[in-house]
View 1 (tube, one colour):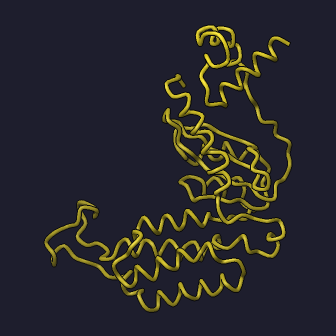
View 2 (cartoon, rainbow, N blue to C red):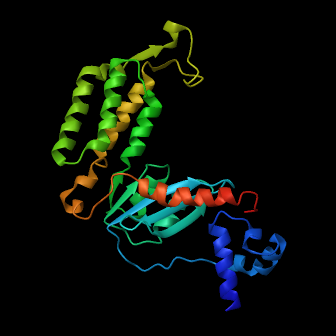
View 3 (cartoon, helix red, strand yellow):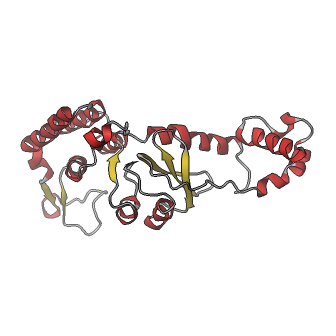
Length: 272
């Protein structure tokens, strides 16, 4: 009973915003009395359940480590985790191997994950987080593109999260194709060093030419590649729609990653 009470106090402090002294007595006394609690290992039991939807995301913590998380997309419950130094393929594979392949997975397109999915969950349908796609396009084009081509492509990216039917998805893909018919030549334009005499800072140091509209080209190729891979509108698939497949990873970012970082921020200064 004493240990139970101590553990409850320890968890109250660990997951709360108060100080150790707030729970009665001195902070030094609290640390001495509850030192044994740090030795408890919280393991997530692998049940073998095949989930309809699993959301995957990696988040970098204040101590320099990366935490890879998998949650049940229906409930938001963490079902597996893996600590690593970077989001590399081997680390993602170590996480995926803990869980039976689900029907669908929602991802943000982080590095190393695609390779691990192809190896560990080859039959699982993937849905790219549409919010992350919009962020990627915004990074390349900014929030206020100056060219007509950039403005039109930016509007196309913003429309992604407003699509709710397969007909709307087909219309969006037609608009992307129409954009390329009008502005596609810009994605093929090249600038040569012998003409300008000046190489831009972002170009490779030994390059003799570069794409004139490099950021516009990259934004278009991102949308075109994801469309071709069939990972933008998986959530509209008739075989999955009845199961409420998500189109974003907002649940894992706001419901899991954010609270973890808040907890670490409140206890900043503690060793790893």
